[in-house]
Structure formats: structure tokens, C-alpha cells
Length: 87
Image 1: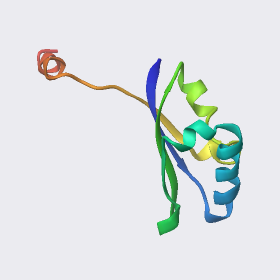
Image 2 (image 1 turned 135 degrees about the vertical axis):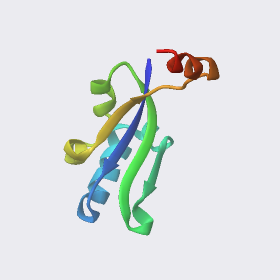
Image 3 (image 1 turned 135 degrees about the horizontal axis):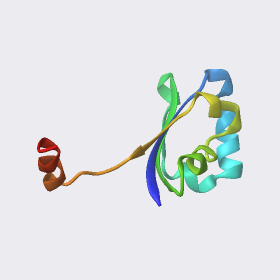
Image 4 (image 1 turned 180 degrees about the vertical axis):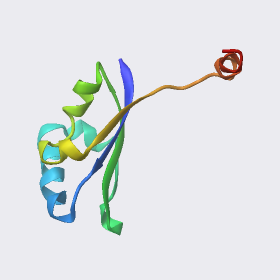
């Protein structure tokens, strides 16, 4: 499994529909999401594990999927960072 960061911007008008869809279709995702909606920043962020980018994208409500950004993320060790300098 790979790790992905999901950023799902949405409008104020799309907000409740998107939240309802997450609650109904992927309730386990709510525990991993952070939202800026209550302060006027209508964006949700989550870090998820998925088999592929496409699989991670399927977690995003359809109403806002075309606006979302899904990025595979990795951690680096100090040794890996040092090796990058010699490339």
C-alpha cells in the first residue's frame, strides 16, 4: 500500500453534500480528515493508504472529485537524503 495526501477543495454550496457523501460512503475516512470549512476555508485534507492513486481518488465525493488533488507521499531517512547529494 502507498500513502497519499488528499486535498479536496469545495465551495460553500457543495460543502454539506460532500460531507454527507463521505459520511454515507466512506465513514472511516472522517477519522482521517481535517476540514477548514468552519473558518471559511472549504477544503478537506486527509492522509490515506491505498493500492493506487485511482483507488485513493475514489474516496473523494464525486461532486468534488474533479477539483481534488491526490499526491503519493514518501518519507525519507537521513541516509537517503545524503545519497541524493551524490546523484
